[in-house]
Length: 585
Ligand code: ADP
Ligand code: MG
Image (tube, rainbow, N blue to C red; front, side, top):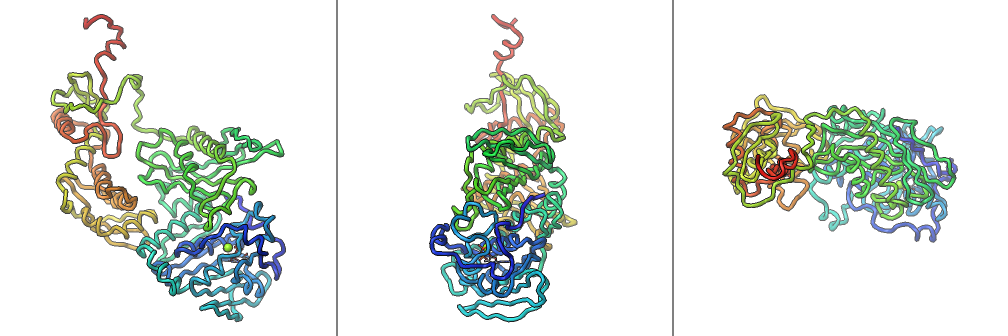
């Protein structure tokens, strides 16, 4: 899938490939502390493995990572003299001098990572190069380097122990072990999705928490998310000609590999965006599920993330975020990775055109994909249905006329016809009752018997670990079952309605988002789960109670996630529509 070459800028691969960079080059490299937390060690070691052409990368982590991190690859390995030189500062095989910086297509190029890691902890590197029988073990601890023979199949293993042992300030600045491992776990997932042709595994305290087979994006999605998410994924492959820096996006909707148009112009910048878009049945409440990669490197880029979300358009209910893997290939010259010490961000030349091409590619792919859109009701009245104004109206004067499509409650009121989204309304009612009833006490819970097993994505699992106490206060009882799978034995049962076991992940993610009031955010999600589903038939009495309760809410006009609950169709709009000008009859 990924068309990433292995560090082709590396010249000779024989012994002597690793050299020290000259001063001038070193000075042009974005400076800053590279190793700030355990996840940075993992990122640097994984990038080295990818640059070495590895097809499988196995990561092991103990505790929060300061105890032990081990990354083993089956890449090309190093000859002894290279291995010894590689742990010195500013030594690299990937660029020769500053003139190579702009066109480096390897993930690394600064020659700093191994030296910085060795500086921050104890490092042991075991490596065997191609066509060599004998491997090398280089140990660097407390400034002393020792070299010995070692037996190992082709490839490299780097083990880092006692990270930050003599840096108390760094240790202090680390978050909880669960959170630090959560970061590592998200990072490995990001690389696995950016490089789906490489098999990754992640083991934490002896337990495997992630394994991708290296057989493409869909299988990687199954591993990182689950079958349901992968089953709703649409593969896409879009090419666009960005012009010669002009900013026009000439993207022709390319769906399916090979539909893209080849650049005819030498000066043109060709962009390729490919990956998988999960839609529309599976969405998330947080933003970190848009996995972006630029030239094989996972990156955080808010503008591109927004471009992906815009491409989804109305397929995303408000307040929901997509799950997507979007890999961009751009000519090396139009990406500058040398702007951030950890290379987590990159600078894009022509970022507007790139964002536009990404949005177009996503939209086209989703437009032509066979997405079943359920519950969508075509209504020509749309434009005349204005959101009800937030006056002091409490619906006391509203009387229920009936229900439309088991989705909407229709009411007659003084100011016209009210159309109430029963699901959104119920969420609001539940949310406020929950919030008031539980102002400072635990949420009642109901036993789940037999216990339910939920498997969470790694980020949500980390959030569960971090916010375990808060979740218990919200009425969950659970235990870790292995990896990111949990056994849920009790769930919140606010107001007698029982939440689903899968509410655990959602509530944890809300807490992790650290909104101004995380408890309120979690309650909003909880309120949603036990609410009436769109599509439930309501008798008139129940509908009446719902409307009456909604009217008593502090904020009756929006559900806790911000979607409208009530639309008013004024009498005048109907009169206009029926051309009843000049009076009632
Ligand atoms: P950089 O990646 O920027 O070159 P590093 O300090 O990370 O700097 O690595 C120094 C050099 O060591 C690399 O250029 C590469 O030649 C070699 N190296 C590091 N890790 C590996 C590995 N896993 N497999 C093969 N060679 C490696
Ligand atoms: Mg490196």
